Length: 425
Image 1 (spheres, rainbow, N blue to C red):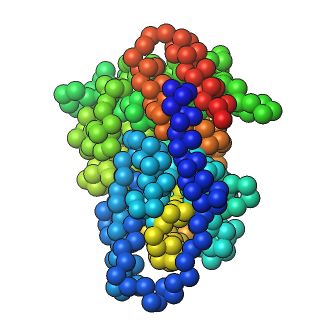
Image 2: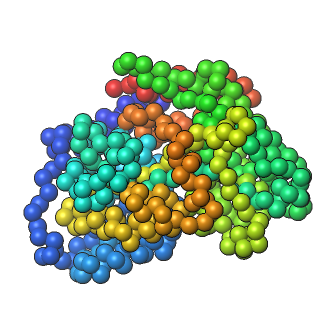
Image 3: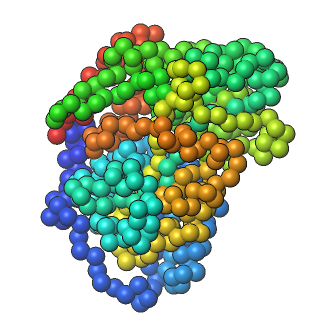
């Protein structure tokens, strides 16, 4: 696995080598004279609704007649390897690329993206999410702009909690026990009912419970990364995740394909709780909302009334160093960061890249999003974390935790594996 990680970085470095370790110079075509071009934009599955994607394509077509913006949706699974190949190719590279905020530095650090410092002020400046600007920069140059951030909380069937006599959880242990008790109670007698949807392939959901319990992947000490996965506090946090995997959900080993639309289990009334970002609210059946059967809450912490620190998910958008249409791509970025489109992002339940427009979000989740983001945390800030994620080490870890009984042994094994990858060159 370590060798595969090194190979990934080596292959990505071909982008830098082919361009003198810097982005190739953009051509100086006048945007008004460009005609008959198709701008390729890679967005990730699940980031935006079909309506928002169509809105972006339509607005671009209106503003730049004769040209076309084509969104190509990409699955998260295997995206690092796919980008490794595509971004290094003059013929296959998309123009604009969405990357998860834990993956971005894997590419910016090797010259796969073109600098965007010249756009910083025009697309929002100091109002852009500061932590994402930091994560989107490499060697003091901005390569990636914050597309959106996602607060992660709990959507739950308040009516089923009431029928089962279960109080709203105020600690992490309460949450784990509620998943077990609700599944056992099955108040509406639904076949195959489960208290919570929690799947190993949905890596940031178990990770958020892990973080909320005080767990830590690794910390940087001097020039080295030291794994913390196998230390007592992390293992205790993992045991709580394991408890839910074993007794609180029937979906610990759900497939990647099924997880992509995991809200269906909630809509089909087969689960009583979902851990998800704010945009999931729009995917939950409106009828359930209208009937007052759904409520939201932050993931609690270890202590009563404490908010748990959850994963601060989100995405960047970047201009490929090998973009065929860099001029149109920069115009598309201006459109993405326009007031109308940023409001569209907020209405989908995300914190938009330009926080000026976060007030456009509405609904119950919008009311708790800010406090969740305030206590959220990130994975280790190093390009090598993208390697670990891209090689599915993190997903494999959660799968092993779901399948194996010895939590300490799993933590020991994967803790060492992560440490080796994080310190590889």
